[in-house]
Length: 197
Image 1: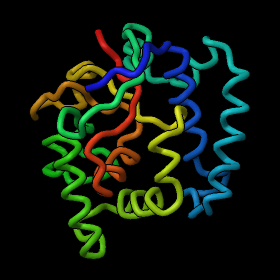
Image 2: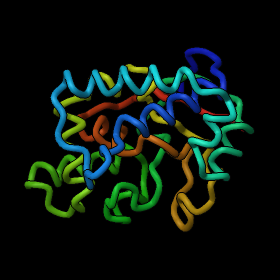
Image 3: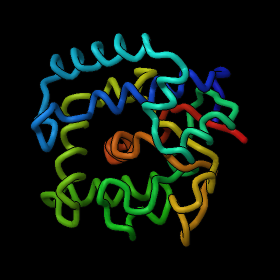
Image 4: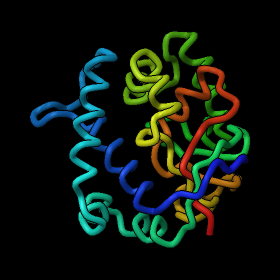
């Protein structure tokens, strides 16, 4: 892990809420339709504008899940570059087979890359739909835009996330599918918001 700078919990919470707004379907839609790169950029800009106006309390309310909110408030935060071998996603995140999510992000990315090469065999509908769309429309943005970077908590912070499997240095709390898309595309490191106890 290479720390780039110290960060604030406020920055991390804004990133969580922006990414949630960007990927949320419109009212009446079950899934967000495939967006062009321009449409994605417009959604991202609108979400950033909206979230920058929110107070710290409003951000906490938008995060919702109390254990997540508590963890975000308790951590010391950094913007960092991390190896895909030192972090992992939650068990079964995005509907991925649990066996594919027992190891590191690098291992999960390898499983997904092989599945995509065979028409998505073994992928649930959500991941089969989301990961190729991320790669096609927003791969560059998710690798660099501060509001789309994954959020990583210290391994084991939310115990159910990896219960019964190997604990890594960090668990991706938000941005699992974005991170898997990057790892499946061959990324060895990713930029992320990293929380330390």
